[in-house]
Length: 184
Image (cartoon, helix red, strand yellow):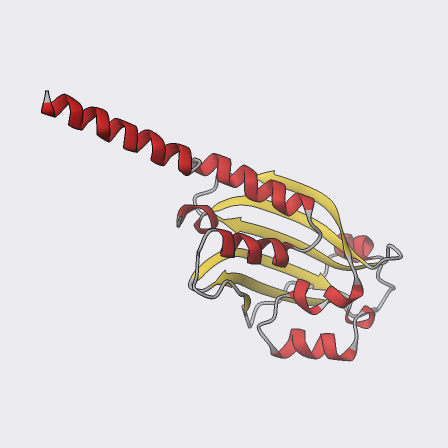
């Protein structure tokens, strides 16, 4: 009888734990929905980090990957509506919350559409792009959103960031990592 009670109690605790923590697929869908509903991926990740207690300080940091360059292709230049000869800067980062890397992002942007201070911050700090350009009041024009079944990646979003008047100034390709949903 004791054994049956112990098994029943264990089953109840397991069921309660399962109900309290959605499975990984549900978390992936929730993260995807949050990202699709907001213009700033940085803001979404910061809130996600805080809500899921991924670090004592839920600040998102852009760990810059240096020494890597991906020149803008003709397609990227077309999407950004860049003038011939206009400079397009490439920036690769890993967005992290504490020790947890949540995403990796490729970003091509038009520095001529940003302020001098924004360009300085992007070149010399670990501040995420979305936080730096927030004063522009940008919105996100989504080009694609795909759920992935790759080993370490769960989502990939591609989007244009545009000023209030619809002028594109950045193309981002963001790959969200399994660690974003597997540590809580």
